[in-house]
Length: 387
Image 1 (cartoon, one colour):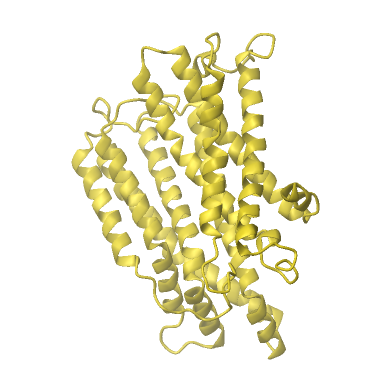
Image 2 (cartoon, helix red, strand yellow):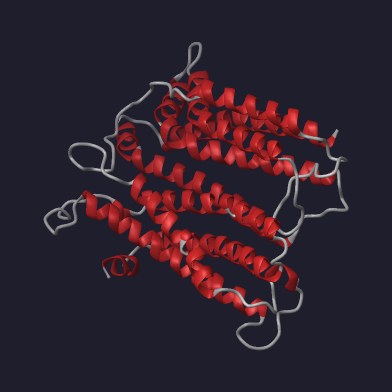
């Protein structure tokens, strides 16, 4: 009940972010239900249905990440004056944030269930025109209890990830760290580069090429049966980019501070070094998803007779939207964490234009470092598949 009351009294932007979490959960829930529908309509091809279900792990992880990012920027999840006296300590605030996340995801998956049943024609009438009934298993009964249990993985995963991310970490129990300068370089950069290189090597070794049987990546709704090594190589390369994200952001900050920097470069570089731990992982995930998307498009351009299916498009849209929104939310969280520092700079005489130019310089530095790296990894990933 407290979660519902806080949701009703939240700022419109906070409610909008929670609505986006519900929409992402609805998309992921629909993909899970489509896998169940395919299994019900094709009992003889259980392996194909399992592949479709396993591919739902990507939008599920992206939805959980976006839910965590939204919960971290929710003012209701922060320890404020008077909350402890009212019995809302750090642990209860964490549980409250997890409950709010679960509530938004439950609304989303219930919406997905209604849409799924409507498109199948289970709510009366025939299945909707323009929808391939074979993809949803129309005309075949779906185990409702099993479908509901599968749908429950979305709110449970998102709520668990939120609880783990927002758990109290220091002795005072506060989940908000003090505003202090942390310029120590993250330790994951060399390991991330090594994992990405190993993934590319595994993919090159195991890929049979685009023209060979099973040489394309099996995406939900269309293709089945490519080598597991290709999937393992892509996953390892993506994990390497995510692991290297904080180190890459810190490297951008060091490059800005190299030589004899002026005040603008020094301010921008120090902020990137300080915020590398906060911005690195979401940006690394965004780079990994962008690289995988570019590589997938290049691979399937080599085989125009095997286009993307509608479920593939839905899954890609959910993942891209979630990781982009997570990166933007992390940037918003970073800006909020620097509010005291920004106010101090304004009191010292820094103009608004200087702060805006520093932000633009940080964005440009990130683009100049991350965009070529993402493109290079994507190109190297597609070489053994399209040649």
